[in-house]
Every structure is written in C-alpha cells, then in structure tokens.
Amino acid sequence: MSITPHHVLGAIAIGVGASVLMDAWNLFLKRACGVRSLDYCLLGRWLLHMPEGTFLHSSIAVAPPRRGECAAGWVAHYTIGVGLATVFLALAPADWLERPTLPHALLFGIVTVVFPLFILQPSLGLGVASSKTPRPMQARRKSFVTHMVFGVGLYLCALALNHLPFAA
Image 1 (cartoon, rainbow, N blue to C red):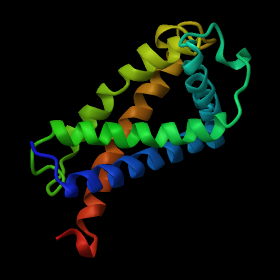
Image 2: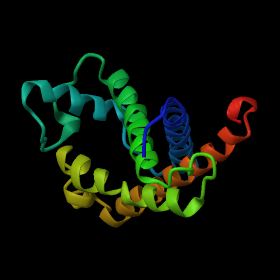
Image 3: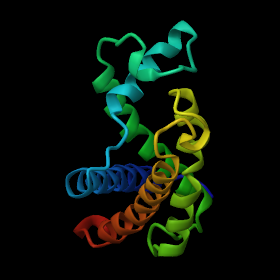
Image 4: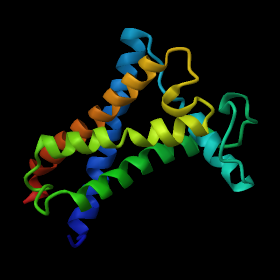
C-alpha cells in the first residue's frame, strides 16, 4: 500500500481518537470499579531513564523521578497510539479508511496487547504479563480489554472521519 497524505492524516485522527477512547475507558474503570491504570508519568519516567542506558527497572515507582516525566508519558502515549494506527493502516485493506470494518480493527487492537504484556510491564518491574503484581489475572484482563477498546476506537474514529464534510 502506498501511504498518502490522506492516510497520514487519517492515522493521526484515528490514533488520537482511539487513544482518547482508551483513556475514557480507563477513567470509567477507575471511577466505577476502582481499577487503576498505568500512570503515564511512570511511562515518561521509564522513557527518560533510557538515554542513561536504563531500560529495565526492578520497580519504576522507586526509580528516581525525571523532570517532565508526566508530559513525556502523555506525549508518548498519544504518539504510540498514532504509530499503531499508522501500522494498522499499512496492514489493513487499501480502502479500509474509507470503508472501515470492525473485525480488522478489533483484531489489530487485540494483537497490540503484546506490547504492554511482554515489553512495557516487564520493563517497569511488573513482570511478564503482570506476573509480579498482586492480581496478575486482573491486570492481564484489563490490558486485553483496554486494547480491544483501542481497536474499537480505531473503527469508530474511522467511521466518524468518513462523516465529516471534507471526508469525501
């Protein structure tokens, strides 16, 4: 597939939108069920330790804080969302952005759960697939469903994008 400006703008729109939906889902879980989500400040802390050569932490919560870690974490979160949307559009059928389908987006969202389970969580000191957390199965389910929500968000945002006046 050739990447056009239309696809780049589409990836930005659906990546940001899907990330916002994911954040709304996590806020709902926190307020309605008391289920906490990743503190993006800790994501920023992890990223800001990397230039010094520290990629793995026994516990990111006790690692020395870094200036600007919260901003870095939030920017990273949305940048990752846009990056994943870009990869999705590159892999999806060529006309997916114009004719979005839920199964493609949902499957992609589910596949993306490998990143937190096997890269982020171990790097933050939480163990592979949250194995070192107090409730590993709850954390795994939350990651899985949250990434399903991201996939649904890709689909819903593409649908919404197609209903904008300039989408034609």
